[in-house]
Image 1: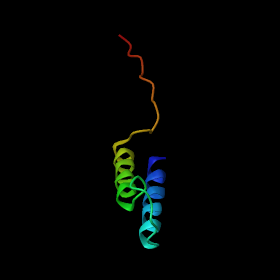
Image 2 (image 1 turned 135 degrees about the vertical axis):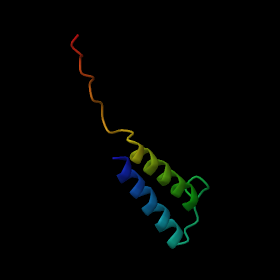
Image 3 (image 1 turned 180 degrees about the vertical axis):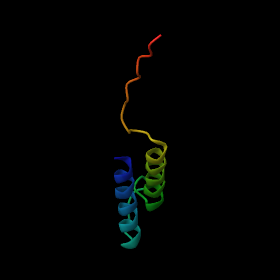
Length: 59
């Protein structure tokens, strides 16, 4: 899911940069690129993959 969000952030940054749209500093292509890289790094690290319950060990 984070990989999809990263792709959307990269796409938005590309469109803003390609059309030379004037936007605030918050939505600049550089800040969206950094947001996309952060989401991509979290996706590759396994954040948000779900919870797996621990198995009970028998003694």
